[in-house]
Length: 257
Length: 356
Image (cartoon, rainbow over all chains, first blue to last red; front, side, top):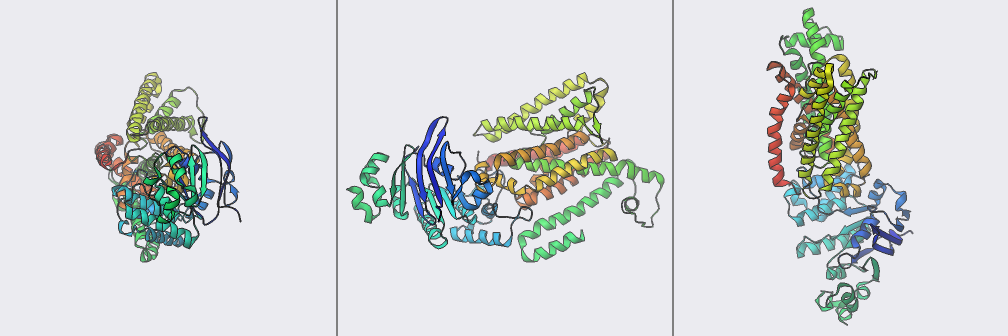
């Protein structure tokens, strides 16, 4: 079976300066992977390269065994959903209308939404728990609420791979945990491959079985939290005392060691 | 009409969301027919609506309604007013669809062919065609349409490029760029008038805007361009919806952003140019029609585009009728009186709710 996402010697440079260099990454279908690393490590660039938003300077990206260069935008969007950054909205748009945008890659070009699309929208709204916001103008929501709405939109897209860049920045603790549980549930029940950039290393260690650590554009560790988030590595990569990081109890011994 | 209502009933029973746009579309078609009859009947010489309908039924559908009319009435209705009303409708469709497209692609509620300078660009192109000593005409399409299209396209291109470099405050930079471009184009138009000699009247009529010079032939040149561009835009409603969350999100949702942006802006410029080539500069219809529709049915382009087209057509016939009844004032004056306050209202609302 081909990998959900595979990069080979992937390098992306902006004006000659590499943001990521020689990244070899293989993510199997139905895996759940967190990307962590300090600011400027290249996490977002790696996500953008996987989503085909920036071109590789060198190396290749494959999605489901197909090189990205052979897929058009629609082909990418049916295989891979991205939770976008909080955008501005030029017109009053209800939450339901925003979630419905997740069906754009699937809807009929002339007829628009079909019954299957409507049930996918309803299902996503239900799963992310934004049903109480449905009729509201998305521009009037709090940042956290908007983040959940965009997550619901990406869930409605129903792609086999879900990519998230900092899905929890604007969320309170309870919602952070709820989003993490939702990602685990999508992963376990639907077999969705989850790839997420996370700032909170503790949250990543709690909820992700595989952690990829990036530093200065390169992968410096890749494995279960106990391996990739050792105390030495946290000190090296993030430059902080590892005792400050809230790791799960089961890992705490190895992190402090 | 009856087919549209039947569809509304069939769908309306199952989904309450679908009921409203279809009801509005049906109401819009009725409104359009009323506007057609009133627009043809009223004017300096009043032709009774019964006679008007009978003449239209006879000439367009070959029906005899058993009502008698005079030959003068028939000439007024069929040679003067009908092409004028139909042309106003077509131009209304073109400006409304172009406005909705510019607003969607540029993600700016204040964009419209007039505000962006697109219409001025088209007018300048048309004016240059008037003063050039060459006459290249094929089936009434000629240099004038070609240069109007290039002018519209050039204005959109410049406004788009400059408004993007601003980053934050994108809205302000779009409006300021549009203003700067429109001023420059106005200067170009003045220069064209200065150089025009015999073409002065024609260029002046572009500036004023209106449907006095409507003929069946001119209607026939505008119709295929505007309706064609509008249908092609409506077929790309999916891409237009993708732009709602920004270009990056649109790409994630499967929209080929550079391609769709170029096609949509090009088609909207074409519709604008075709409208300006027959009717000159008429402001604010492209701003008002899409927004009023969005207030009723939300931002989904699949619904907004057809409804804005219908509403734009009604609005334009109404504005032209008002202009005629007020003693043949330029129709642009009427649309400005409606549109400028609406623009200010939008500007105020937008400042509060917009994120940039």
